[in-house]
Length: 390
Image (cartoon, rainbow, N blue to C red; front, side):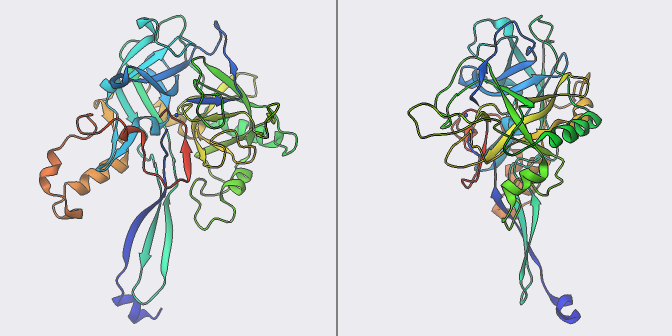
């Protein structure tokens, strides 16, 4: 383009969502029941109080008052945009391996919900068109990126059945990445990570279980995960590069072939395991949390694909942010991600998208105007599944 043309050209930027969080359901496919008493007493179930304390996500206890989970568990959408569930819409159930509420001692009231500021539910592109010239496309965010949130409970986890999980520091996460990456073999997949969750046991995500399950999975190095999820795609919607540091990936380590059925699949995390922990051993042989269950690409099998990796938020990347909230009580009961703050700022500008300034007085996310069906229907184009409960 000549300089004169460039000076008078008008550039029209447009943000376009291309993939986002899907509606959400519990499951560890091919899992084994956890038998109490066990050391997995850091596992929690997130419950929706307006839905009779229904289980919808997992999480892990990280200190006396804080739970680590996935951002998409607490950030939902409706026609007016995204909103964060309020503390009074949530309970945490801890110290039990059965998913039914049988003892009030196991229920903990929530005081604060904190979402990572850079959480990105949708993969979006910015399209720029210069009159008389070609259109350029730039990836602005990938789907379910920075999918991390924290929940603070009012009553401390002092029950003998509840304890804190050990998180992978940035240094430990790097060590584990290197070691598990070197263990990867396509045709001899190692069982070197473990995922936990409540829910279904089938690849169609239809049959649920009330007992906490776990299963072993194979860590797959990021370059290999990138190839499987993005090779040939014009826009990298889930993994932005082979050296991505915000996610980690797994594949089934073995084949499950039920007798009398043509269906073959493997162990996997699935819908409803969202927010739960993926664990691995550090160099000292201690089990630490390295990932937070996030999502996976949609296919013929909802879960359990032998070839399509599931992905998790990489705990080591967010360790310092997580630690910054321990032993604190935030000033705000809800700390929203930037996507909501920016959206609200635009809605409060008269004339923007035809929204009147009076809408600035509306309170988002208080449950008054959103249907509960909407809580579980996040905007999506059939590309991505996340692992929450429908």
